[in-house]
Image (tube, rainbow over the protein chains, first blue to last red):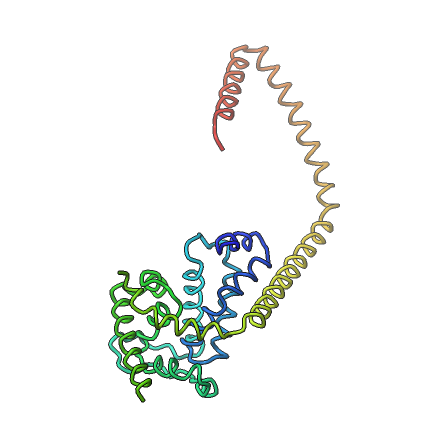
Amino acid sequence: MRTDPDLAHAAAKGSEAAFAELVRRHQARVRGMARRLTGSQAQGDDIAQMTFLAAWQKIGAYAGGTFSAWICTICWREFLQWRRRQKMEIAFDETAEVIPFDRPFDRSASQTEDRMDLARVLDSLTEAQRVCVVLCVAAGLSHREAAEATGWPLGTVKSHVLRGVAHLRTCLASADVA
Amino acid sequence: MRDEENYGDLARLFAAEDAKLEAAPFTAGVMKRVRRQALIRQLTVGAFGFLGAVIALLQLPELLSAFVGVDHTVTSALALARTEINEAATSNPMWLAIIIGASLSIAAISMTERA
């Protein structure tokens, strides 16, 4: 099986088939990340599409390394652009205890059993914790990769992940008990 | 132990949720937009290229007529230069030596200079 860097190299030379294979491999991770960041399936999928279109245009700039980290960084930037377009940009507050911007929570999706627990618990995190948990736990980026993607200090990312994960565990455990 | 290894169970929960997303329709949608973008780019570049070619073709007669003038000027300048060099060499052979020296120096620099 061809590796991601091989496929990216072929895509940079104009191979649509190679790029389609990359999309097939990474779509779940990117869509999951975008859906969790936006809180909406439709908007998450739109952002994921924009992410792959941007990746196709910038594929020549991919300089090796983890392809998933590269594509997730693009997804994060697309999410920030989407948020700016939504005119919901607010000053980032690391100490905030409540979600500082109103996410368009997808009611129809929340009613499905699969999404219920994880989506609800993610929504109870602060924005910074949710972003760090989505990037590191759900999308599988390392703390360093998440810090590079967001531009936040490594220590900040680590502490948000730690607190977010602890909160997730507590909430999921109490849901199991109930 | 890496910090990332402390939440493998949660990562598996998220991964299981993501694995349920159907790849085929999404991939087809992305590739459709990729092809559309490429088509638009090709059409734009092609249209501008065609426009440029038409403008260039329209300028061709004027360019050719100007080239005849330029060609005549260059030829006459070369002929004049040769005459002047001959005159300079006969009046003072030192000029010829200076010109040869300068030409050799320029040739040596051009050959040893890297791009």
